[in-house]
Length: 91
Image (cartoon, rainbow, N blue to C red; front, side, top):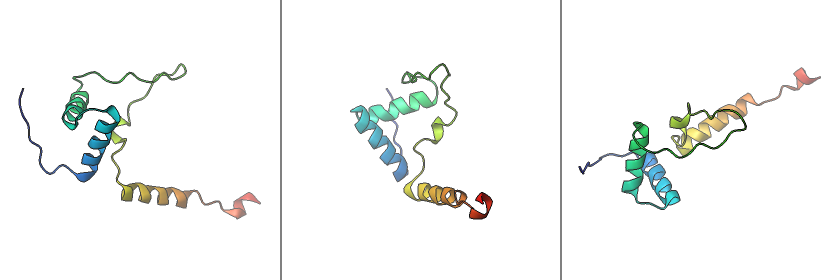
């Protein structure tokens, strides 16, 4: 086995890895190895949840959990601006 050292890991990524390790009750090292294996298609993936007759879609998986609080808040504000109901249109 080879040892690899990573430097300057973004804090957001660090939090995600730590959270996943805690959820899976495994070490950070093992979690990182699993995530790397999955990202290159060389490892077991968790079984997909059954969708009522429809195949699961994984096209947005890479985006899950990648926003920080500020980005999520900005997105929510943008959505809020789009959800304003014009009373004149509903007369």
